[in-house]
Amino acid sequence: MGSLYTAAASFLDARAQGGRWLLRIEDLDRPREVAGSADGILRTLEQFGFDWDGAVTRQYDHAERYEAALSALREQQRTFACTCSRAQLEDELRYPGTCRPRQLGPDTPAAIRLRVEADAGHVLFTDRIQGTYRQNVADAVGDFILKRRDQIYAYVLAVTVDDAAQGVTHIVRGADLLDNTPRQIYLQRLLGLAEPSYAHVPVLTEADGGKLAKSRRSVRLSADFPLPQLCSVFSLLGLAPPPSLASATISDAWRWAIMQWNLSRVPKRLDLPVSR
Image (cartoon, rainbow, N blue to C red; front, side, top):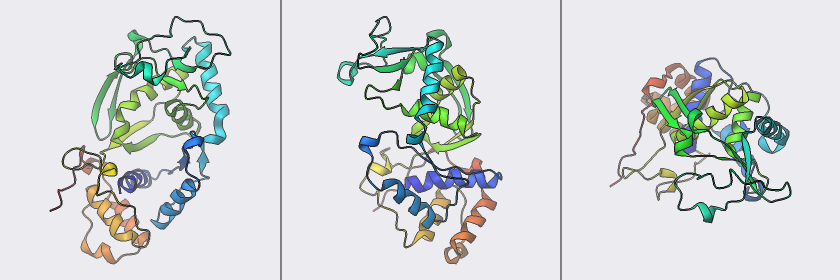
């Protein structure tokens, strides 16, 4: 339900503004990918009445984009190799700069980190839902990974480059990625890329603050009965669907929701009621 909620918010915001809605499969970590999962996502979206513009893109096909961005950052002397393991850093609140001064050979197995300078790491932006958000990336995160030791590009680099390559102007996604956004903006500025407008919808949580996706009430969507689930999501997005919508077609339900869409109605936080 949480994934449907976020996808619906993104889709409605694009369609209400006459925009294009792009679909990207973020499949960089191929060793962890479950066979058939991407096709399952596409089928579910179709069954719930989503339609996207253009071809589906897959990150695994665009390694050259990420390597070109990494090369540009190297030329700026903004990267360095790091051999620190997760175990070595588990007690650190931020990366302490351990490998910054080290000169590692080109054949040394290492991750590539971005050098985040303390005097330039402050990022301030206005989220369309959450309001003003500020973070000093140097203080909060430190030098972050762009390419892992196993040669897999990091999410933050890939999505930043892909958003620019696809001409993305507006991003609507879950608030669990809000604190990741300053890192993306920091990268955009270093690479001379346009900064999209961001809107972070609340993550569906239980009353105790736990994420719904990790709770006992998290259930799989039923493609056999998409309309009731869509109407529930519309309600959570502040749209107040009328009773008559329960007997509408999927297409008519989407048309109604697009006409009613107003981002200002989306709450900053959303706790689900406690079931008795």
